[in-house]
Image 1 (cartoon, rainbow, N blue to C red):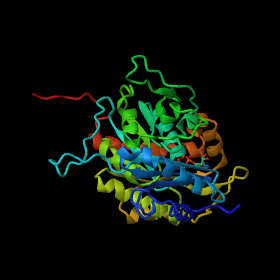
Image 2: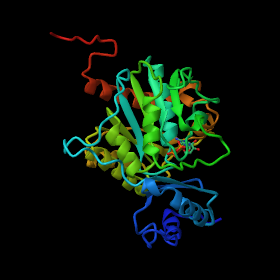
Image 3: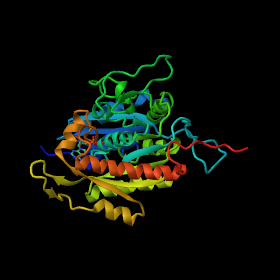
Image 4: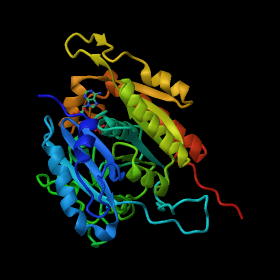
Length: 367
Ligand code: ADP
């Protein structure tokens, strides 16, 4: 079956007219964060939150025209606030207020320019590799369109909230995990009627009993739209990692990710090239399907670091889908060592920002 492209999805969405403005929703710039992953299309429609009721019909129509395209298995549209609430007029250089997480020493966003590049799989394996180093690790699945961490981390069930206010994170493979996926029914599509995807994510940061963490990884929603930008502005990120595949197109998207974090002054630790080459599960032979080295060359050009490459390998997909990350089940495999080396680099960068000293260094307060 022919596969729909993002362009075809946008063309289909151009047939939907905003009843309030009288123009199509693409021209109006309402379509945000479009992600296409194995025939599953997801996007948000930015609206005035006060008019959410009026836009339910638009949302349904948008899902229908995209869902009818050849090669699309599912289409999910969310309504989201057009803009984050305006920052107070004072403090023009500061941007929106950041959330405070005093027990979390560092927060690192794992982002990608588009969906399907292996961002979630990379985040899972990095989290487990960091935990294997003896660090206290948390993982927030902020991929609200397709929360996959419950499956990748092999966790089922719902988080407990003994006091009805703060939720306890779930736990597996030595990592504390929170995901919107724990709070939703599997077989119902995610429909955020009230807009506020960003505020839901902030709540998942703030209202979760993370406890003492050395590092909290955030599996970001794919893409570089308003939701990602708001997250980057309001979460006190220590740094970010951008996952990309070697194809040029993906790298163009990755460049957008880099530009977004730089705009909000979040350090970009570097690029990870995923599905870098094909590693044959039978003979181990390496084939550079997409031409190799794109991310490394691009990283050098953009003055950021190349953190490492992960091959396209059946064992990575199988262990991921089974909830038994390869870093945990086969820690000495070359793939696991590659993840561990990337985790080392990420932690090294975090430590250099935190001021070295190692994780057990006491804080000395003078005066
Ligand atoms: P994203 O979070 O970017 O949408 P995922 O991590 O969900 O991407 O990966 C998309 C698919 O590709 C999943 O089925 C995953 O198992 C598979 N995948 C990711 N990385 C690899 C890899 N290095 N080798 C083989 N399969 C991979």
